Length: 158
Image 1: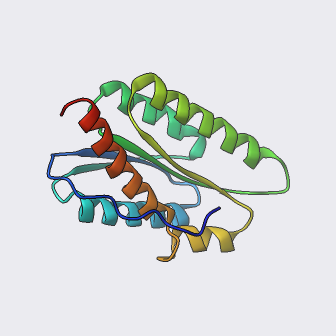
Image 2: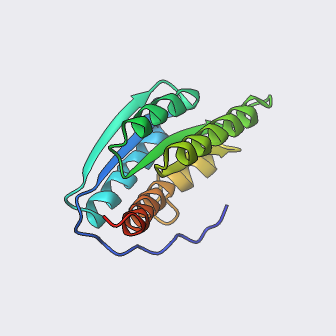
């Protein structure tokens, strides 16, 4: 994983709607992602509507993201989850499955889905990227969501 965070995109005065779908599993780390994403969204798009939808675990995230995308009300959806590697390959299978589902939903529905369902080898990596300020993937996700919403709005003439 890169340690360089993307720069802050330009702000935008257009009314935006962002949805966050977050797992309850590994709550400490997921809550860090959600908090940082929400804080950055509020800084970049102060008039945006932001909704949070909780699901039990990372595997359940795509079904809610799909429902939100099908409703066509969100400018972008941020999917937040944390998968910690255990002794089996279950974490790898889960991560791959969720990633593929989220990408398919984004392409099929034309709604940006920012994938912050993260896999880590250990809790130190999770702590650094979910709770820290230097490399916070929640902050990066919010920046990506705002930037892609701006690009799509420009392309769609809105």
